[in-house]
Image (cartoon, rainbow, N blue to C red):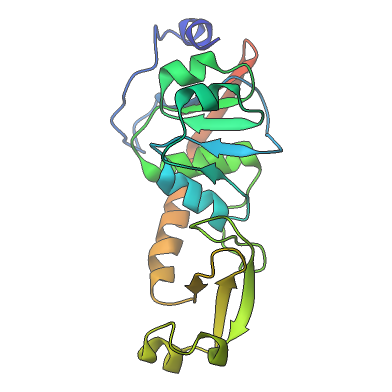
Length: 203
C-alpha cells in the first residue's frame, strides 16, 4: 500500500524531509486508511513524546518503550510509527510520520484522531500513564509538591492510576506555544485520500 500510494504522487519511497512550514509540497505523513480512527491507539517506541501529548488532548494512547515490531504489527486499532517496515506490515490502521518536526506530528495525529488542539483539564489524561485525572485540593498534595507551588495554587490534579500530581503553572506557556504551532501547521496540511490511504502534505 505504501509503495503504490507514493508512486501515484511521484515519490518512489518515504524519505526524511527537512521541515519548512513556508515551503510548499512538503510531505509530513502517510496513512493506510482515509478519514479518522476510533478505538485503541498504539504509539511505537520512537514516539513517546507524541503519546504524552495525545493523552493530554484527552485520548488514551498505549505506549511502552519495549513494544516490539512483531507486537505492533498485529495489534488491532491504530499504530502511529516512524518505522517504514512496521507501517508496511500493518493490516489494520497505521500512520507513518515522515517528518522530524514534533508540531507536525501533533497536527497530523490530532486530525486522524479527531482531536482539538487545546487542553481541557476536564478530559485531559495523565501524560505519563494515560490514567484519569481527578481534581484535588491543596491539603491533599501537602508534602508532595514544592512548598512554593502549594502556596501559589489551590487546584491540583491527581492521576487515579499512578498518583502523579499536576497543576497549571508557568509550563502552560510552552504547552500553548506548541499547540499554536501545531494549529498553524494543521491549517496548511492538505490530506489526499488515494488508493485506499491518505497522504498528508503542506501545499
